[in-house]
Structure formats: C-alpha cells, structure tokens
Image (cartoon, rainbow, N blue to C red; front, side, top):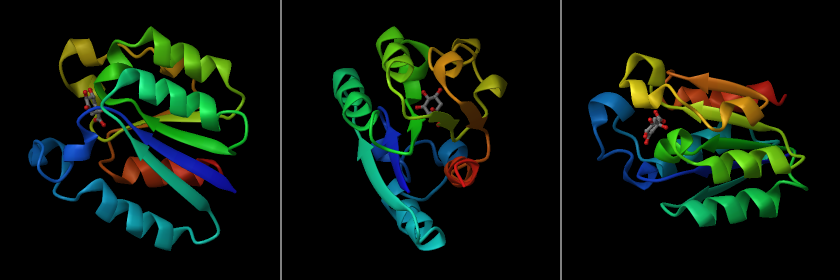
Length: 137
Ligand code: DQA
C-alpha cells in the first residue's frame, strides 16, 4: 500500500515552531517512527511552503497512490485551488491537523479541504497522522 503524507506551509519548522501548540519533534523524526510502526506501508513524504507545489504533488500522486494524508496547514483555510485538487483526484485524502483548529481562532474553523476529503482527523498532535494511516488499513 502506497501512502503519501503532504505537509503545507511552516510545517518544515515543526520542533521549533510554537512547541506549546505543535510539540517538540521535527516531522522527520516523527516520520521515522511512523515508518517503523507500519513496515508494510510504502510511505512518501513531501512538504512545501508553496501553494502551487502542493497542488502539483496532489495531482502527481492522486491517480496512483492508495491514500494521501494532507495537512495543508494555513492553506486549509484559504486555498480553493488545493480544495479543487483534492476533489479532482481519485486517491482518497484524509485531512489532518496537529492542533484542534476548532478550539483556536475563528479563521481556522473554515476548511476548503474537508468537503472533498474522505475524512478529517485533528487535535491529536502528531498522532493525528498515525490515526489517519490506520483509517486506510
Ligand atoms: C495546522 C493548523 C492550521 O490552522 C495552521 O495554519 C497550521 C497547522 C495544524 O496542523 O494544526 O499551520 O494545520
């Protein structure tokens, strides 16, 4: 089974960025533990701060992968383009967020992804990604 994790803007700063919200681990550290936990899954990981690169990656993988786990970060709340890309592909997408976006500022309550995603998992810290992987098993 081929699953891709796609992370959006500022998630390259995990470990340094607002650790009280996002924790102390870098995504690379967490990704290693995820690969060990699910040895049968072929994972790929992509991160970009650029909206169009995220759309390109969703299009590239979205007709051949078994699943995409997408944390579009701030673009979740602004990007009709990423929402449309998720709608356009055949690979099921799980939207994830590290924090509980509904317990934060009201601008984080809007998502252009959710309506086109298979499901949404948020608020469990980095464990949100792991729960998303389990949803594909
Ligand atoms: C986030 C939540 C977003 O509102 C925020 O812009 C992020 C990270 C999360 O994983 O909790 O960058 O997607």
